[in-house]
Length: 401
Image (cartoon, rainbow, N blue to C red; front, side, top):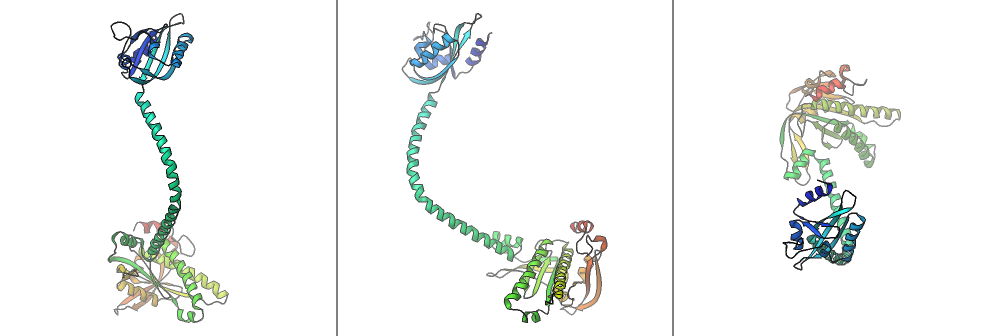
């Protein structure tokens, strides 16, 4: 089987194609059923009516010239044209005609493969008409769009303003409430109270604040206090602690809530040491400049609390319980520049920090509570010479709690 026969055999297997073989004179010799279906006829013989020549199939002069060129110049041609079937129906076809060369190199016969593209052509015409209509509609819409642009710009400005205000509100809410509590309020519209078994509560208070306040203008006093509290905010955030509130010159924060953890005694002590180091460093510089110093006391106690949101108009996240009262007593019984912890907190952290026992202090219920000064991290667990930063050994222990 020569190449021509292989192409003809392969193409004839496709029922969607019309295939015909004709000789050098254009006389049809063989056609497929697809050809008969498309043209309504076949070669001369038993078919009635017949199509004796390929040239009789195409009315277009350009197509006939392409076929003559294929016969004379021995090269394939392809074309798209409209035909009329024997029954007078109009069809659009896409055709490919290729010469089959004999052993002497001359074309002995030709293969014509046609495909009915009438549906595609009609769709194309419909699309062209639709496109023309769309262009007209587009021209009309362009005028309307110009009128809408101003309104759109105003709407976008209003939308952006609303989004900005919403972001401000959410940011403000997160500044007031812990993330988990704020999330609960947004999704459920309320946030209930919760009991925690182990929370480290910290009070930081400036000694002699009333005396200092008398020497400063109110605006200057507030600015200085705001600067200190802003630094405290940064430090406790680094140690995963939660700011509860400020009361005048008192700063209150806690660890182990709203997400419970067992590392909160360590977190609270490390943050407190860093805060005292920050204040002591500032005070040393102020002494050299003969400026008034702000002396800070810090007290810590670990125990159970109840936490939740109170109020409807001005929401506030707060904690309650004896743990809060004892932490306050630890602060009141402490010394400036030092971190004073209760015996309970000491028992959690004693293996990792150098501490001094200070005796006992009476709490609100007239009970006695041990007190300890936390001086620094022990050398074995300290990364720096000051004993402020834990090394990997201590960090790994805390992370496993």
